[in-house]
Length: 309
Length: 90
Image (cartoon, rainbow over all chains, first blue to last red; front, side):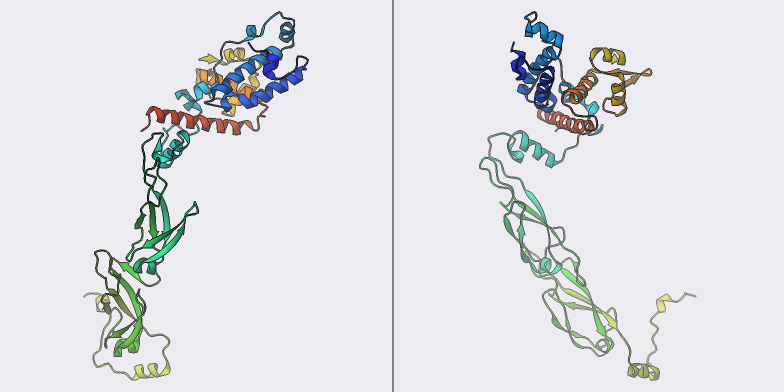
C-alpha cells in the first residue's frame, strides 16, 4: 500500500486544509466519470480517494501517524462508479437521446469509425485498401450555362479547386460525378468521387421543356398584322425571325434547332415562341383610324365565353 | 432497489434536502412505488456522482446541470459506440 501522504502529494505536516485541497485537485483530474475508458485514471482515483478517506479524518490520521493502523486497513471495499452503469443499458435512464433507439446517419458512422479506429470512413481499422468517400457538393449554374454548357471553378472546403464541366443540356437537380476528386483512399485505395448537384434557377423568359425551350415573344400590332423580320432572343444569342403576316396573340413559331443544343445522344431541341401582341400606349392616329374602321368581317373573340341557350 | 431512508444511511454526508432538490431538478430519477421513491443501483451511483461533483470537484449546483448534460451525452455516445462494436445496431 502506498503512503497516503505521497499519494496526495502532501507533507506529513500538511494541514487538514492542505489535504483537502490536494485531494480536490487530484479528484478533478482523475475522477473516473471524467475519464471514461481510462483504467489508469480510475486506478489513481481509487488510491487518491482511499488516501483522502484516511487523512481527511483527523482521528484516523492520528492513529495512522502513530502506527496504530496501516494504510491498507483503510482501504474500502471496491466501489462501483457511476460509469459502470451509465454506459450499460441501465444508463438509458439518464439518456439525453430520448426513449427512442438511436438513429444513425451515414455521417455518424463516418465520424465514429473515423475517431474510434483512427481511420477514415470505411477504413474501420482493417488493412485492406479501400476507396475514399464520395464527397457531395452543390453548385448553382445559371439557366443559360446549364443549357449551353460551361466550366465553373469550385473551391472546396479543403482549399482545393475543381473545374466542374457542366455539359450542355444539364437539368436542374442533375448530379455530376468527377471521378477521383472525392476523399482520399485508405491504405492506397483509390480516391472517391466528387458528386456535384447542379441547381438551375428559373430564367426570366426561357422555360425548359425537355430538349425544347419555350418562351413568350411580345410583338407590336403592326408586326403581328403585317409580319416582318424582328430580332428574337435564343439561348445561343439573338437571331432574326420572320413573323408571318396575319399573326396573332397565341401564334406559336417554331425555331428549329434553337432549343437545347445537341449533347450526348439527344439531337438539338427547338425553340417555341408564343407571340403576344402588345398594343402599348395608342396614339391619336391609331384611335382615329379605329373610330373610322369598319371591319370587313366582324369578329367575335369571345364566342366560347357566351352563355349557351 | 432501496428506499430513501436506506440511501441516506448508505451515503454519508447526504442531506435529505439536497436529495429532494436533486430529484425535483430531475438530476436523479428514482421510480415511484406505492407513494415512495425507490432507487436502483444506477440511481445510487448517480447520487454519489453528484455528491462528488459538488463536494470534491467543487462544481457548484448552478453549474451542475451543464456537467450532467455533457456527461449524459458522453455516456450516450459511449453506449452507442459499444452497441455498434458489438453489432447490436447494424
